[in-house]
Amino acid sequence: MKIKEIITVLEEMAPLAYAEDFDNVGLLLGNQDDKATGVLICHDALESVIEEAIAKNCNFVICFHPIIFSGIKKITGKNYVERSVLKAIKNDIAIYAVHTALDNHKSGVNKIFCDALGLINTKILIPKLNFIQKLVTYTIPENAEQVRNALFDAGAGKIGNYDNCSFTSKGVGTYKGNEDSNPEIGERFEFVEAQEIKIEVTFEKHLQSKILKALFKNHIYEEVAYQIYDLQNSHQNIGLGMVGELENPISEVEFFLLVKTKMQCGGIRHSSLLGKSIKKVAVLGGSGSFAIKNAIQAEADVFLTADLKYHNFYEAENQIVLADIGHFESERYTKNYIVDYLKEKITNFAFVLSEENTNPVKYL
Image (cartoon, rainbow, N blue to C red; front, side, top):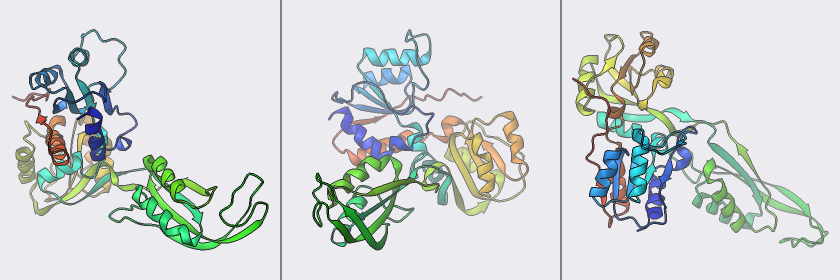
């Protein structure tokens, strides 16, 4: 199996278009046309993980955090990033990162976080904006069903928990072809009035080329009239963080003991307890201080995240309990999810879960 075949499956799990603009996801190192001898899935592609890959005959490493995040001007082995990259290059090992492409997926990092805590009724905390487009096109009634179904097959017409969503209306279209035209209805230089169907569908913007290809292939007209609009609607199934509920309310102390056990935390830093039961929980794996206001607006009783600074805790304003459970801890089951997903989709290949603990934070 070639590396690019595995990448295709990976990008079904975590489309690169879902990633944040600041991120560096996808194939970071290596040739996608190389054959894969084995795949090692890890949290961080450190030098020790590359050595593990070599020992286990894996020439493809899939990591959650991108080992190359910002620009590299030199590769001399002076820091942990350069050492990892050098060792990977010397041993023909490819590296691929998923990071926020999986963070933003409804079944990704934060759903894994919620599932570990047993939360129910989950939904995205910060739905992704500027990600939905709308296609409007026109065709004759006899061609409408074919066009609409082709657009659905290409990924259009999905709204929340529904698919095959569209709006259709009737009208009259007009046109007159020139000497180079070859009209399906009427003749050159003839003014034609035709009964037409207007079809409207929404789609995720990264699917635009696929949607248009389906439109042009299945439309009966020589020249296809269409418009594409950017919508301001938020995408309720893509975004950062998640909110869920405990099946039964518990005290703040009981809740933190649950978190500490389920997420295997070395410690939990938190704001003042409010003496209220915990029912509604907001989570954001990794660094999530930017989402404190969103968690408050969601009326969560507690917000679990990582990398909170001293002054972030003041932002609780006695409206919510903020808790920093550790960056690695909040994402610890992500690599397990990736392994399970790949094993389910590709049953005849060796996917290996890294045994290296790459958490740089230690606790007494």
